[in-house]
Image 1 (cartoon, rainbow, N blue to C red):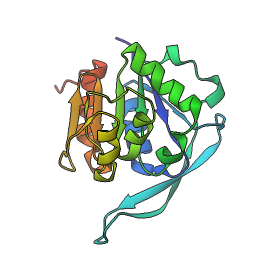
Image 2 (cartoon, rainbow, N blue to C red):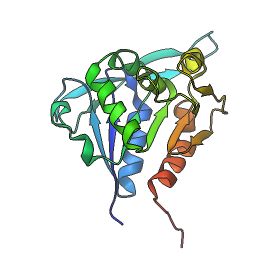
Image 3 (tube, rainbow, N blue to C red):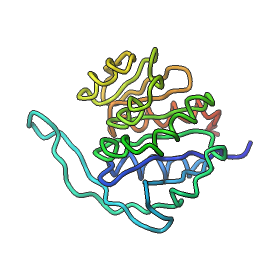
Image 4 (cartoon, rainbow, N blue to C red):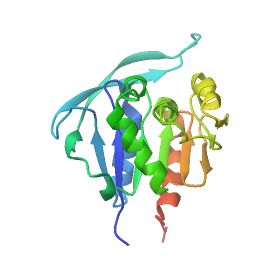
Length: 195
């Protein structure tokens, strides 16, 4: 079976690990990941951020590396993709208001294609009516009220876990990337064998 094509929705200050680890891991097993950002062209860069908990009441944010956009946003053909991935960090809070991003998410929802979300990525999904209604979804705890108001059920997974509801895979944050990616691969029909 040939690899799948995954559309990754990002904005400036998206969480670095949730871009690089996901992209490289999926590409390592033969999938294609197109990293896109509104109004960015292939070859342009976005600033990522690093978030962590260091004893304060909320997370801290630092500059991460620059991430390369590898597909021009305006040239995305949604029918070419098998799944969509909403990376977390701060990017989702502003790209979710972009009607083009909302239309992209709506396409995957209405087509019944897999939707992957981690951390604040769920903010993109709640901006599109009906996407998480009736679904059980994990996310950063700060997103719980939005999940509930959008008609979903917030699942408080442990930091290193992921949650699967049908073809929707979700996790709390970057510390859950291993479990998250393992479940995404299962949903994509990818089987890894050790010999």
